[in-house]
Image 1 (tube, helix red, strand yellow):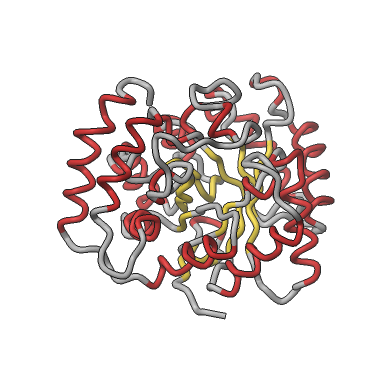
Image 2: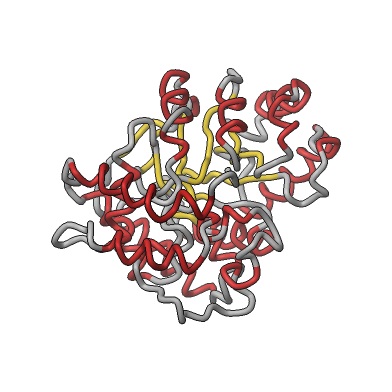
Amino acid sequence: MILMEQRELGRTGRDVSVVGQGTWQLGGDWGEVREADAFGVLDAAVEGGVTFFDTADVYGDGRSEQLIGRYLKERPDTGVFVATKMGRRADQVPENYVLDNFRTWNDRSRANLGVDTLDLVQLHCPPTAVYSSDEVYDALDTMVAEERIAAYGVSAETCAEALTAIARPGVASVQIILNPFRLKPLDEVLPAARAAGVGIIARVPLASGLLSGRYTADTVFAPEDHRTYNRHGEAFDQGETFSGVDYGTGVAAAAEFAGLAPDGATPAQTALRWIIQQPGVTAVIPGARSVEQARGNAAAAAQGPLPRGTADAVRDLYDRRIRASVHGRW
């Protein structure tokens, strides 16, 4: 195993690797994945120094959690910290975010993962009103007191939601979309999290693969891949697919971004390294559907700091190509 930089994940008091492993794709929402292939991806990540897996109870209707649970049962000495999410199994109305439902969802996740206490549970992009509800946080505190969960956080869609959560004393971490095509969290969310001691988990770091530089305007994704059926937010928030950027715009911008990659680094590693370098970021959680992708993602942690001019180049690219495409949506 390779040693990777570890950072404390906010108020959890636990250290996690700066590059984690996102596991949405293992549930089958990016196309079918065999169990052996999923285990191969997780093995490659752990061998590359990853100590942090991120999942959710709705990824493949629990399949992602189940795969992680079986994987860790067979490899009990990995020391991997597992974050999951809850809340998307019910209609998205604030009235459903109550203690009884939390316990029901929690029981299912604990069974899927094969543990008594979950390391971290995040509210999974709930309705905006949930972030301001005292009753919701009281219920989460009860879950901690009952030792069902060790810590809780939120996965937010907007910067305003993230800032509301950061102000709550029991929130350990905030997960938010952050990548060279999504810069808004840099302005307020990351500084607020640093000041409060809240961890930041950067999700959708490669803009659903766009920033890998592997796709063209002619790329066709499988019908069951969210990059086919959710380009305009048909199934869930549009920001979860290509970071909400129009696909054609994203392909053109990604081709330009690839030119910023230093010698010896891929565009994907450059994007991950850029995120890791942002003050306030704890970990980034790219997905991977192959052993090669998992190894490449983990290796981004060992890349040297990006040249000083890269940050300015990313901002310029964003202003010229991305801002107009998403103006007003965030």
